[in-house]
Length: 95
Image: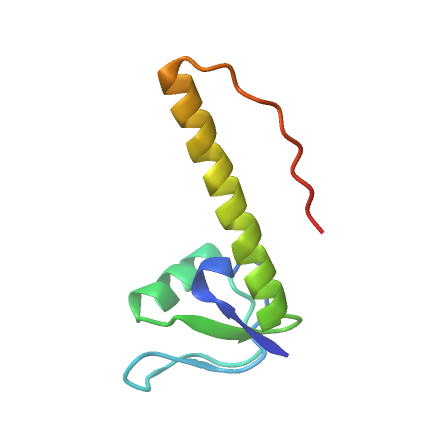
């Protein structure tokens, strides 16, 4: 259905299509259920995205935006803690 960035793959997802490494070597066939070890293998072989059942580029982009938002908030809180500033409470709403 759609490709997701390798960084967004999770254990339990199922490959929609086979995955090949950078030099064309077939790493996993379609239908394989991913686990942490398989995801590590994909990264080691230079795979940047994989076609997974139910995955879409839109959901991939949304997940990336949410990940960046959380990282930005964490950096802001760490900076405030380091400077002794009182943190401002802010609600983050996700769609």
